[in-house]
Image (cartoon, rainbow, N blue to C red; front, side, top):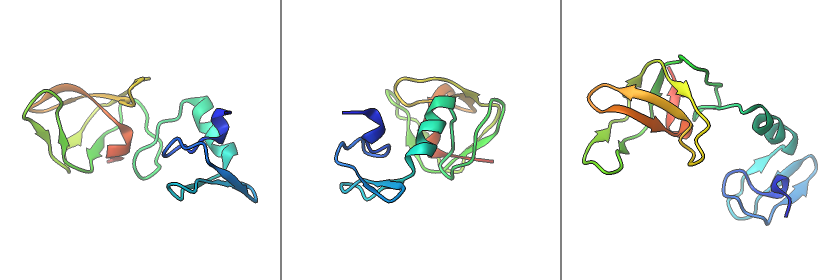
Amino acid sequence: MDDELKCPQCSSEHVYPDGSLLICPECAHEWDPSTVAADSAEGVIKDANGNLLADGDSVTVIKDLKVKGSSLVVKGGTKVKNIRLTDGADGHNIACKIDGIGAMNLKSEFVKKA
């Protein structure tokens, strides 16, 4: 099936049109297919609130995140300065250095622009 007809939130193929919007019956997500295509074509990375992120921005982590392979936790409210945007195939599209933890990658859905 065409990638354009998959839900951007849950990747379900059972979407249907309703006027100018597409609707996913599995997760109830509604979106305009023209804006999703434009965002993915430009490689736009947005935070949890929908704000555009750029290299060098400062962000704040919005929830506690466990560090894989370690007992460390990045606490919600941690401010991260000077981020770098990457094209992570695993969804981790922010490269950064966090005090006390070191270099790591984050998903943009777990941060907000500071």
